[in-house]
Length: 153
Image 1 (cartoon, one colour):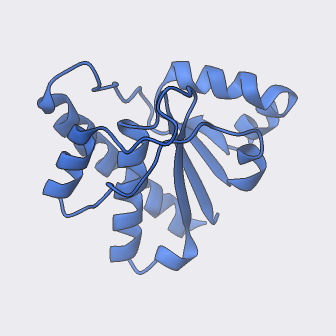
Image 2 (image 1 turned 180 degrees about the horizontal axis):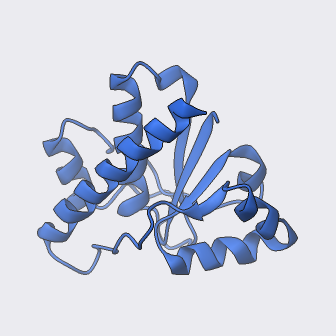
């Protein structure tokens, strides 16, 4: 596997954090050139905008700069371009299934389309800064497991 796409609703909170965390961990393990890592949203409200300032802040506290990232919406071509399309929650997974259409069952059966974790990553957008800390910790643990999975393949 060479490419991973993280997907949340607006591509300003969870998915850019996932992208930044995985890129950081891959770099520390000497894998940055081996992986294409990106993020997108199912919605289009924030296209072109930087990540939420609270996401930028929590990432920066951990030595990760996600400030250059810009939100984009999932494209149909993403299902072919990326080896893994990882939804942050069940609602986004359902929307990705809808967008993938007839390809969705095969993508899911192969494990290429799935939730990132075995449970939903909560959207911290309407909460306080503590929610962003919790999400960061969840995403970091998940990214560590994902790198182990990728290395085993």
